[in-house]
Image (cartoon, rainbow, N blue to C red; front, top):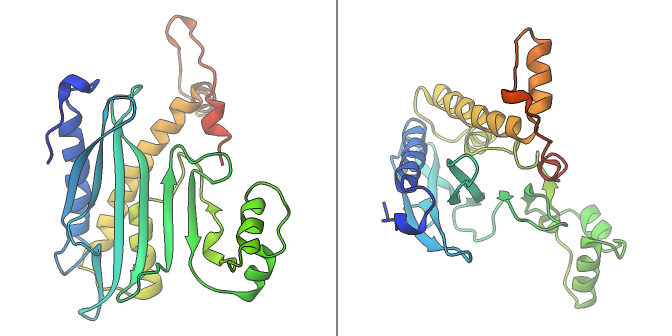
Length: 255
């Protein structure tokens, strides 16, 4: 683990929290991938505001190795950029990428991305499918001159052929986006990659952990709706000093 300058971080436990995050993922991967090449490494980067972030990626240069019948078949590129949430003081994902490549190809089959600050025209959580279909190429060649349609038009004017992979499909926003376990299980189901006995249980445990955390974060986005639902289920919810908290519309309405 890299050393973090606690004097420039709002919480001196950031390094330990990042270590726990990375260890949690590695332990999950070790219960799924038979070849044992599940190492992750991290490094500290400085942010524009003077704080720090930590990037995490596979130790293997090409990403996690996924085999079929003991033969290297795919590489799963896993990348995170982690920061400390100023609200919860928990490790928070600022950016993540899960990318699957066929061995020997530099172009991915698909990518699953999250960008906390994605801009107005790209969904915060999205996936791209890097395939070719003439119908999609034709549709992108006929886009309207609005939003990303303008970008496609400019590329076409320069002679670039529109690609299916240029399209960003939204996947649940900030809170309900796919996790690494989802990508791994999809590779198991659709491609039959090699897995260890008990891999299913490890995936379910990891997904449960992820969704509980995301649920807690979603509650913080709209506490009053959460309280109302708990009361409907029979719980007594009593805000301290009658406090009310407005919903975070930026999170609830984000694409």
